[in-house]
Amino acid sequence: MTAVPAAAGHPTLAPSIPRQLFLDSGYVLLGFPLALTSFVVLLVGLSLGVGLVVTVIGLPILSGTLYAARGFADIERLRLPAVLRQPRVRPRYRLAEPGASAWRRIFIPMGDAQSWLDLAHGVLRLIVAVVTFVLTLSWWAGAITGTLYWAYDWALPRGGDDSDLAQLLGLGDSALARVGLNTAIGLFFLITLPIVARGCALLQASFGRAMLTGVAEMRNRITVLEEQKRAAVSAEAAALRRLERDIHDGPQQRLVRLAMDLSRARQQLATDPEAAGRTLDEAVTQTRDTLAELRSLSRGIAPPILVDRGLPSALAALAGRGLIPIELRVDPELGTPDGRLDAAVESTAYFVVAEALTNVAKHSRATACQVSVLQSERRLAVSVGDDGQGGAHLAKGHGLVGIADRVRAAGGELAVVSPPGGPTEIRADLPL
Image 1 (cartoon, helix red, strand yellow):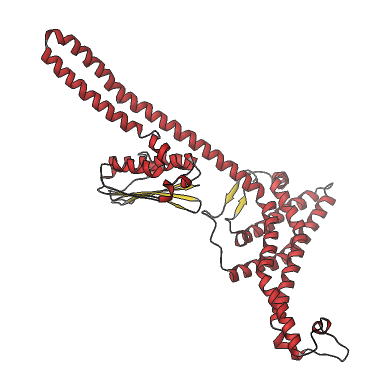
Image 2 (tube, rainbow, N blue to C red):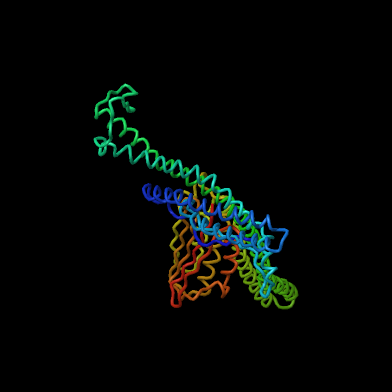
C-alpha cells in the first residue's frame, strides 16, 4: 500500500486570519455530525458483522462496513488540506484482481490494514469531535453574546431578587456595569476565538491524519527515498561510463599517438633531423590538444574552486570559459562563510549549470545565455536560459537525463521549457 498524492506542489500559503477562522470553525462544527453518523453506522455494522460472523451473512456485512469506513475516511481526507495546509494523500487500497469471485471481493478489505484503521478512526473520532465541537461552539457563543450584549440588555427580564454577574463582582447593578463587564468578556472570547478554533481544528485533523494517512505517508516517503537512491546510483553510473568512454576515445588515443610520434622522432634524429623536428612539433600539438581535452573532461568532476571558495566562484569560473556571453546572477549570501550550502547541494547545482551550459554550446545555436542561482526560504532555484533554437527535451537526452537524475537524487525537481524555435530554460528546484 503506497500513498497517492492528490495534489502536487508545495504547501499553499496560509490564508488570512478571518478566513482561517471560518475554515477551522466549519471543519470542527461539521466534523461532529459526520463523526456521529460514522460512529452509528460503523458501530452497528461492526456489531452485526462480528455477531453474525459464525454465519455466512456476517462476512458480507463486515466487508460492507469496511467499505463504508473507507467512504467516511475519504470524506475526512478531502477536509484535511484546508486545516493542515498540505496536499491530500490517499492510500492505495488493496483491490481484487479482474475476474475475482464475489467471495474474493468480500475478503479483500479484511486483509487490508488501512481499512481497519479507517474503521477505528470512524468509531473513535467521535470522542475528539465532541470535545472540539463543544469548545468551539462555546467560544463562538461567548464571543457573539458578549460583544453584542449592549444590543439586548434592555430586553432581558429581571426580578427583584435577581443578581447578575456584575452585582456578584461588586460592580453595581447599573446598565453600564452590566454592559461593560459582558462586553469585556465577549472581547476576550472574540480575541482568543481564532486560537481556540485553530487548536481544536488541528487536534481533530491531526488525529485524522495519524489514522488515515500516517502509514501511507510513511510508505510514500520510503518510496521517494528509494527512487532518489536509484536516481543517484543511475546518475553516478552514467557519469562514470561517460567519463570512461570519453577518456578512451579522446585522451587515451592522443597519448598513444604521442608516444608513437616521440618514438618516430627519436629514430629520425640520426638520419633526418628536419623530419624529426616536424614530428616533435606534431607531438607538441598533440600534447596541447590532450591537455585541452582533459580540461574539458574535468568539468564533469567537482573542481577544487568549488570546494575551496564556494558555488559563486565556481560558477563565475565556469561562465568565464563559456563560448558565448553568459549573464550570471548568484545570491551573494551563498559566497559568505555562513551562507555556504551543503556540499551535496553545491555539487548538484554546479553540475546542473555545467551540463546545461555544455548543451547550450553544443546544440542550441544560442548567442546569449543567462544563469541564475537564487536562494529562497529552504529552496535553491537554479535556472539556465538561452535564446537558441529550442526543442530540448528530457526524452532526447543531450545530458538532460543525467541532470534530472542528479536533481532527483538530491530530492529536487527539474523542469525543461524549450518550445521549438526557443527560447530554452532549464529550471532546477533543490531543497536545502
